[in-house]
Image (tube, rainbow, N blue to C red):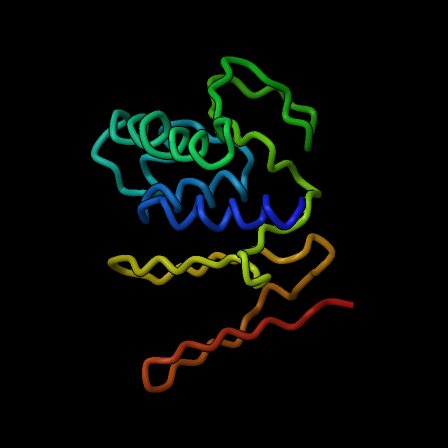
Length: 153
């Protein structure tokens, strides 16, 4: 991914509202999703709210910035990760597993913080070669949150 593409991804995420960014990060993590999953992820009232975000917010923003959509609906598709057939899912395009991590225009890794009713979720993309332990050291002091993960050898 060249520098311009990375800057475009930063612009893309900045142009999305919080729920749409949350959907995009979910796709980055899973690659595909059913509408029902996305309804739960953003606490949507119904499928139509999610469809609106996919068709009228996320893809039009992607077309404006990248010149093409980033999500597509497929009635049937084989998951390239595990070889299983997946039916009636939305799929993330052009951000397949193994590509370089998304970085902002200042070369920092892209990160999002979602302050939800009962939790704080922090999502950041790191190099696929980085492996970490599943236990984190979390500290909060004077409104500053610190999360430390040990790397695996």
